[in-house]
Length: 97
Image (cartoon, rainbow, N blue to C red; front, side, top):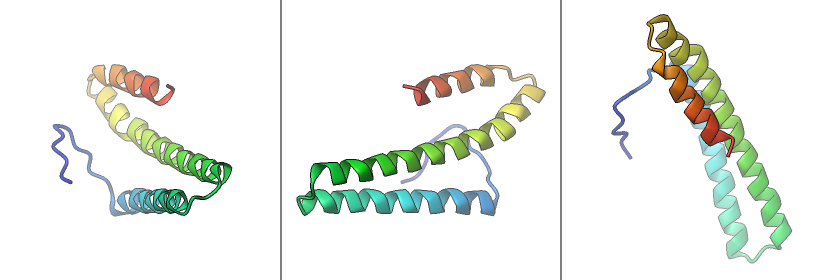
């Protein structure tokens, strides 16, 4: 799937590798959960695995948010693009739902 975003972010190879590795692990967790459902695993066993996948996604978001704040937000504020702070606050609101 190609991103049709107006804004982009250039990441170092190391940053991209780290994010992709985390997503690959999460993808594996989701496939495992799907397999558990297909094999009629016990409900609480599935719930535990879903909680682990949620924690992994939250960890991914924290890493991405940290990179965003330290990079994009700081750079935009230095360039007097203060609307980035509003964008950041909106993202934090969505994360805290």
